[in-house]
Image (tube, rainbow, N blue to C red; front, side):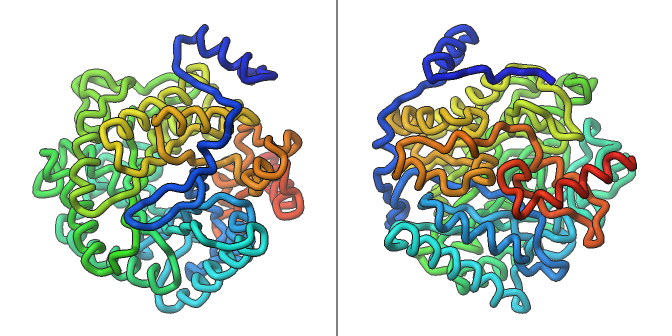
Amino acid sequence: MANFFKYKSAADLEAENARLGIDLRFSDDLTPLFQPLTIAGRTLGNRWCIHPMEGCDGELDGRPGELTHRRYVRFGAGGAKMIWGEACAVVEEGRANPRQIVLNEATKADFARMVADCRAAHRAANGDDSGLLFGLQLTHSGRYSYRRPVIATHDPLLVGRYKVTADTPLVTDDELKRLVDAYVVTAKLAVEVGFDFLDVKQCHRYLLNELLGARNRPGPYGGSFENRTRLAREVFQAVRAAVPANVILATRMNAFDSIPFNPPGEPVPHTLPLVNGWGMSETDPFTPDLTEPLRWVADMQTLGVTLVNLTMGNPYAQPHFGRPAEYPPPDGYESPEHPLIGVDRHFRAAEAVQRANPGLAVVGTGYSYLQEFLPQAAAANVRDGRVAIAGVGRATLSQPDWVRQLLDHGKLDRKRVCRTFSYCTAIMRAKDHPMGQFPTGCPPFDKEAYGEIWKDVQKLALKK
């Protein structure tokens, strides 16, 4: 295992930053992170966001399970004012795993209880829930749907992965059109149960993200920029028309796709120009080209989108782009680059979108790898206008009260800082469970909930 993270201070990181020729910044003044922000007339109480992370712990019928409920209660108490709820499938056949949550009339009461209890926990720990925005991510998992892959385009670089063959049929135009109504139904229910914002998910190579880069798809949903953005555009228009004006319309979007990698960290063989891809040049799949993402962000604002959360990569095909880590997941590989270069790539992409859209609320990604120094990096980025909101993913599982730690102590609890060893992803990839999917969390720092689960996953690995 590579040992990249050897830094004892922000000064050590700044020295590494200079050595690598990247642009990471740090500030000990955390004040910018606790300033309010107005988004579409709503007030966000601070600049901290908890990213959407699937716990894979729903019930088979889509209801949030006990661990789902527990996680959002802990997030509510933790002090972050933006809680970006995890992926919720808009149709049964679009679930990524048999325990992905699904909001419908049968599960509505369970979602309402989860939202209410999250807010109650926030009030109990933080005095009131003013400035708290809790959203839900609406998704179709596309080629990563667990029942059968639903692919939007034939991508030769992904053939042979996740049950996709050269003969897997494309989802039809009529099937895509029908999805608009499914998004609207789920969106209206989400508003009924109390969510403040709705994310139409366009990232990580799930269906809508795949369509964005589907240059070789024939028909009205592929080829040109207008066609590739057509389905998401229709969803945004329909959802905006169907929900009250005070509900924030949002998206988590890939800024950059890149191409798959194979162990030991090498890009798959490929020919140029590439036939598909979003946020990248047809002739250079390793360098972001934000021309189309910037154009789409501008268009989305005309459709009513006021909150954009930027990410990149495909967690199934090249996890080092999306989640710079010290140790790879079991289906991954050693990072082919210093993870700080990956953090910098995230920060630069978010900055490019934020600078081009100064009135937009942009959420940045890539902070967890910085471990106990993530607050200083977030403070510098918000201070310098590189991003409006700092989003934290894996690090919230090990220390869900990290914002309260900063408020009460001015620093994180070092004993519970995520070291990006990919335990959470390792559990997520384990499928040999009576319900078809293990629930995922942080075994090292949340042994109460995940200690025994991790032992079961380890036993499975030994058997294999």
